[in-house]
Image 1: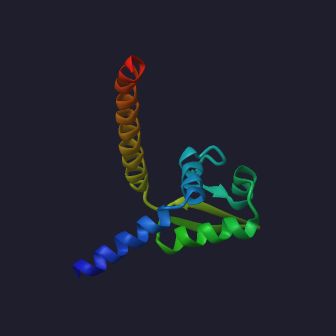
Image 2: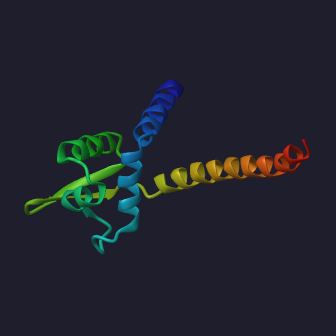
Length: 118
């Protein structure tokens, strides 16, 4: 059972580990395309400036992992986030990255005066 959970976690992280998929999720978070927080593939194509087949592949990965869901409305396919808690994971990782960058900046700032003395 524990190994199944670890496998699912690894697959979810793998699905999130691509800049295009993260951008898709950010676009879904914004909800600027539809009041109901769904986004059409046509809007994603415009925003991402990628080929339809490429965007479809990324959406398929997110859908397979249960991160997004889709539904047809006429000729459009609308996508939405399945569980908004995924944004908590993304935000937390972003926070960790920002903290690490700030540590690096602080280290560089402390090193600069020492380098000037040499």
